[in-house]
Image (cartoon, rainbow, N blue to C red; front, top):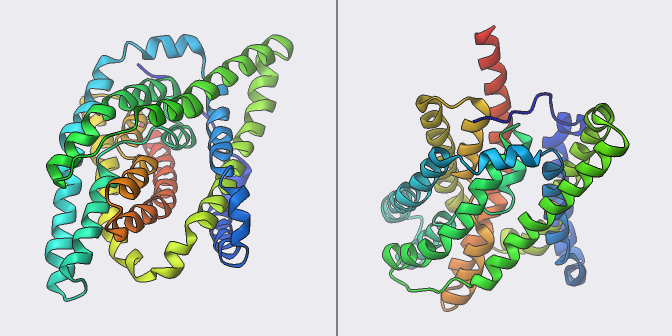
Length: 344
């Protein structure tokens, strides 16, 4: 099944890379020069994420969502990749870098390497249940299918995350079901409800033409501005990790980027091989790629409190992942443009 958007991103996207760089710099400066602001900025992440996801929900027709609920093959493919392949892939990549390459070159001692390897595994075992909807929407994927995949991932990872951490790291942890439930409500339930109400009211009062030509472009701008705002807040709150441990970024960047690119392209091309179109393949790709860094950070802080470097490595994760996911969005859009030219 397919529900595919047409059209491009907001005009803001033309200089999005520049704005991202500016947002990161602003966040780092704020975090360094005005740390007292973090008391207030910590509330900015849920607000920013809500307004990143809400515009994507406005675009979704509930009838399409009902059709997506029947997407058993897509759910099965994503579940297989996320829970039978990805945890072992991140373990293997971590083994290569943190057990062979970096220690072999004399760049890391065993204790530091194992801590970073553990952090990488925590970042890799659970798929994203929030921002992945934003990446799917920006890449013009199948929004209703994305909601269904996110809902299934949020349920499955409650069971699989502790098991994989116990298996791959050797530590038993418990996943806070209440916290996951709050995340699902905040980043799925409320935006979906607000989006459905907005869509119904606007279509009734203004009509489909105004909705498509006026509201949707404005919401596209809102989505990207919210993304930039969230970046500023995140780098202000966690930027001290970069400033205090700049060398650790160099060790986390190669394995994490390799992991993310392998996840997306493997899932995308496998879906294409099976017969899905760009929209569905892109949605499957992003829902196999985005990682639940909020959960990873929470587990690192609580279960690995005696090893602070584990928490540091998980905090570095989203600071690397977000720019890489945005790069994948641009790659995906170019890929779609190239495929359309070939078809013509």
